[in-house]
Length: 181
Image 1: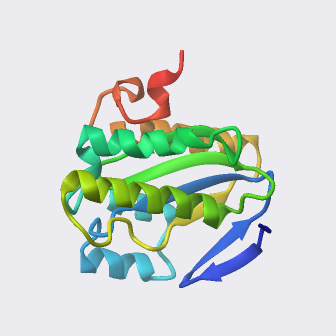
Image 2 (image 1 turned 60 degrees about the vertical axis):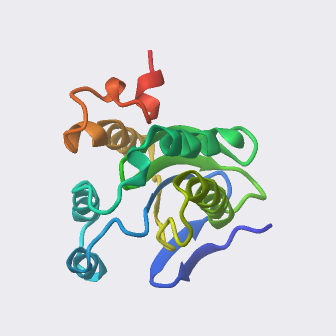
């Protein structure tokens, strides 16, 4: 498999290259009402606003269920060290954030697609439902330098706190902050 560099799928641009650290956010199919989607599709919509909108916790929030959240986290662990290297993650009630290094011969889209396909099939089985589970698109941003990495890791760790789910990052049971010493 080859890396695509800059490319577009649907309406979002993506940058895919080996040995690049990526910050990826993907969300449940029902996580945003129509009015919020319209705001997100505005070309002036900032990344901060996008994340703030997701933190409202709209939709069925299937990821609030421990078995579903663990399923997603286990999918992240499955190929850590071979297809990618995990740095930080958090599984929110209706979306996830993952910070990872892409390895050679494992393009960004195939990594994210693999996570989404596997977890959708298994989660739908656990929920005794069928149909779409994840939104088709995902947001990605490649990490430019150490400062950007640090800010992104802090954002991921603090997301459950900012959303009012816990008082400290280490208390969130579905993220990497709980594993830090």
